[in-house]
Length: 291
Ligand SMILES: [Fe+2]
Ligand SMILES: [Fe+2]
Image (cartoon, rainbow, N blue to C red):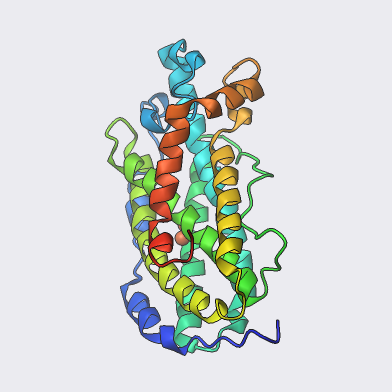
């Protein structure tokens, strides 16, 4: 622990208490009722067309219906895989950080938070297994902060800002997927339940970040610059995670890395992601944690 950082969490006690009483997960009941996919559901799209990473690339426009369905199913597996990797980082680092928190209610809520993430991971993995698709490797995707140990308050702030942004961006995807009537009911319900529970996580997250930021800012005059750097590089990491050549290859797309590069260069898709990322970070900028 850095000797300068003496953070107390007792002021977050009320926020934690409120969220503890609101945290009743119905994930299992809701998703179980739609499980497993029927044979017909296995033959339809699983990811909304507006979210398909290479939707603006000429290669997508040349695909027949069957190829588009196959790609959409793998895009969902990629999205669930990214979430599984993100949740694993989150669980590991949060468990390590809890002992540094001096308030029992805040600790209690963070344990609920971890339990919910464990449950999400279970559902994402169960879905992947049921459609016989391995979790996609995303070695380059990480929420850990660059150059800062996560087991300090400052390291945790950097880490938790990325968790918050990842949750906000995931919620944009969850919202679209949960409303798309072209998708199987199970896919919609997993996304709908994730959306509800992530809503609680981000509402805790912004309070948690504010608390930590206001106490660390006087100790670290360049904190905003450092956060800007962390967030800008995280936007690129997340964007690249959404364009996965491994799934293009599975769809028999030639030169998958070239297709990824070209798809990322498309201004409409790039701007769409950038605007959503900006929207996800709106509260952080409003509170002057970022410029
Ligand atoms: Fe989650
Ligand atoms: Fe979450």
